[in-house]
Amino acid sequence: MNRATLHPHRLCVAPMMNCTDRHYRYLARLLSKHSMLYTEMMAAGALVHGDHERLLEFDSSEHPLALQVGGSHVPDMQRCTEYAAEFGYDEVNINAGCPSNRVQAGRFGACLMLEPQTVSDCVRAMQTVAPIRISVKTRIGVDDHDRYPDLHHFVDTVAATGCSIFIVHARKAFLSGLSPKQNRSVPPLRYEFVYRLKQDFPNLKIVLNGGLSDEAKILSHLEHVDGVMIGREAYENPYFLARLDAALFHTQLPSRGEVLDAYKGYARRQLDAGVPLATLCRHLSGLFHSMPGARAWRRVLNESTGKKDASLEIIRTAERFVTGGLHG
Image (tube, rainbow, N blue to C red; front, side, top):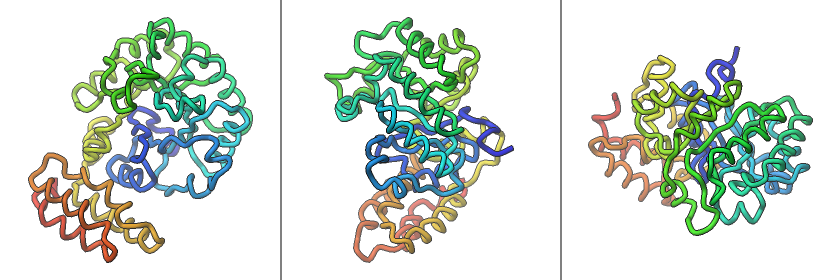
C-alpha cells in the first residue's frame, strides 16, 4: 500500500499561485511525510496549448500529489486528465473556488459554483479517459448564492457523477468588489456549513479549508470533517506542517536543520540543472518563522540569492543567524 492510500486528504497543502511550485512541494514533503500536496492552479488551456511537459514536472518524492486544473471546456479538461495520468499524478482537482477576474474571464474558478451541471459534465468526461481520481475545490457560496441549500445543491449535483472528494473553503466568494487576497480574509468563515455537508453526505470525503493556522483548532475540526487543507500558514510558516504531521500521524518531528540539510542537497542538484538560486531559496524564508534571528535569515536570503554570483554559501551565511533554531 503506498502513501497515497494510507492517509489521503486528512492533511492537505492548498494550491497557491506563485507558491506551491515543485520546489516548495519538495520542501513540504521533507516537512510532512503524509500530507496531500497540490500544484499551483494550472489553466487547462495553458496545459493543452503550452509546454505541458515543463509545467507538469515533479520529483517522485512529492507523492501523493494532485494537479489542480482551472477550466470548463470538456475536451481540454479531458486532455489535462490524460496528461496527469501519464505523468503519474495521484489526482486531478477542479478549481471551482478562485474568484479572480482572470479565471472568471476563462469561465472557471468560483463562477463555476453557479454552473454545477458544467462541473458535472467535466468530471464525468474526465473519468472516462484515465483511471485517476477527480476532486473538486470550491467555496461555500458565491455573491448572493450563499445559502446552505445552494452549496448542498452544488455538491449533490457534482457527486452524482461519482466524484467523492470535495475540498471546501469555508468562505463565500465575491466575484466583484474584492481582490483575491481580500476574498481570502474578508468574507466570514462559516465552518458550520462544511460540517453540515459531512452530515448530509456521510459517504463523501469532505475536506475543510480556510483560516486554519492553530493546531488545537485543526484537531477539533477533524472531529467533524475528513480532512483539513492548510493554505498560507503552510507557506509562511512551513515548519507548522511538520508539527501537524507529527500530531496527526504520530511521525517523528524532524529538526529544521535536518530539513534544511536535505533541501540543500536538492537545491544543489537543481542548480546544476540551471534553476536560479533565488527560485529555490524563496521558499525557505519562513522556515524559522517567529524564532530568534528569523528576520536576519530572511534578509540574507532575499537580498543575496538574486545576485549573479550567488551560491549555496549564502544559505550557510544565513544559517549563522538562526543557529539556535536548527535543532528544534
